Length: 406
Image 1 (cartoon, helix red, strand yellow):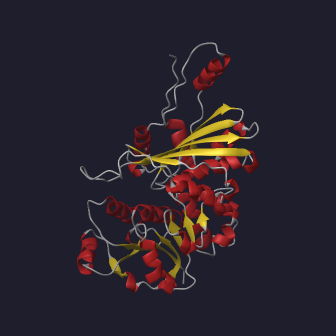
Image 2 (cartoon, helix red, strand yellow; image 1 turned 180 degrees about the vertical axis):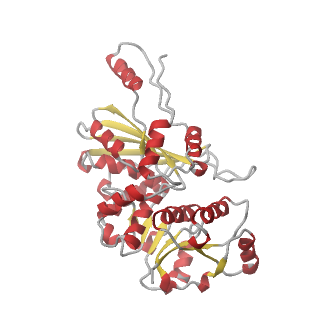
Image 3 (cartoon, one colour; image 1 turned 90 degrees about the vertical axis):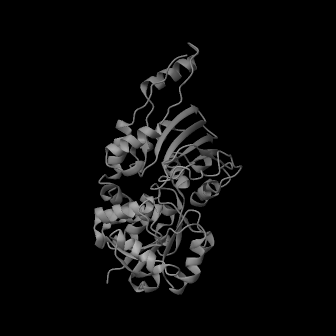
C-alpha cells in the first residue's frame, strides 16, 4: 500500500503545501479542515485545488466535536465530499504529517492524536513548539540544517521555519557559498511584516498597528537553521508595513576582510529559488560618479513595487500575487559591507523547502539532498511554472526605475 501525505489544517500553508505536492507527485493527500465558508479565502483556495487537481486528489476529513453535522453539510454544499471526522482516519495509510494548525493547536494535536501513533514523522510549521521536534528546525537550502542534516531529518520529526526565516535563508545560503562564516562579522536585519491578511474584509481589525518590537523570534530561528552564524546576528527589529501580500526584509552584512560581491551576485543569478533584480547600468554609473565626487547626486533606492509584483503574477496565472520565490536586490556599500532587500511572498515561500522533504520521503528515499534539490528545480510546478520560469518572469518583466539626479 502506498503511504499518503496528511496535512492537518488546510489553511494558508496547508493548502499551499498540498498545491506544490500534488503538482509534483499527484495524490491523493489526506486533508483536515474544521470549517468551510464560501467567503473564506482558505476555503476558496481549497476549492481551487479540487478544480485543478480533481476531487480525488484530497481525502477530506473534518475535526469532530461541536456542530460536526452542520459543518459537514457546509463542505458538502460547496461540492466537497467529507469522508468522516479525524477519528476515522486510518493512520496506517499515513507516511508523513504536516501540521499547519493555528499556533498552540499543534501541542494539543500531538498530545491527543499524533503521540498515539509511535513512529509517525511530523513536520510542524514556523511558530510551532520546538520541544515537539527536539529542536530540529529545518530549511532546505544549501549550508542550512535541511542540507547539512537532510538524511537524519528525513527520518525524524522537524519544524519548517517561517516565511521570514525562509526568505532570509535563501540569500544567506548563497552568500555562504562564496564567503566563509569566519569572514562574516555581523548581520543586522529588519523584518517588516504585512499588516493585513489577504482576504480580509473591510472593517476587520489590522495586525497590532504600526508598532516596532525590540525583538523578533525570526532572529533566533535564523540561527537555528544556520548554526555556523551563531553570535554574528544582531537582534532584529520587526515592524508592520501597511500592505497585504508580502513581507519585506532588509539585511546589512559586515565582513572582517574584503569580500567577493561579484561572486555573491553570480550565486543570486544562478539560484532558481529566488529572483534577483540586478543593478542597472544607470545605477552603476551613478555610484561611480558619486564615489569620484564629480557631482552631488542622490542615489535613488531601488523600489520593488508590490503592486507590480501582483500585476505580473496575475498576468502569468499566479493567483493573488503568491509568487513562491523571494525577490532580491543587493548592493555593495564598501569593501567590507553589503546589504540586501528581499520581498517575501509570505504564504508560499516555505513550499520549495517543504517539497524537498516530501520528495525525499515519498519519491526518492535513497537520494541525496543535491539530487532531490536538483530534481525539484527541474520538475516542480507552481501554477504551471517551474522555479526557473518564475525566476525569469520577475527578473525580466518586473519594472525597475532608473536613478535620477538631484
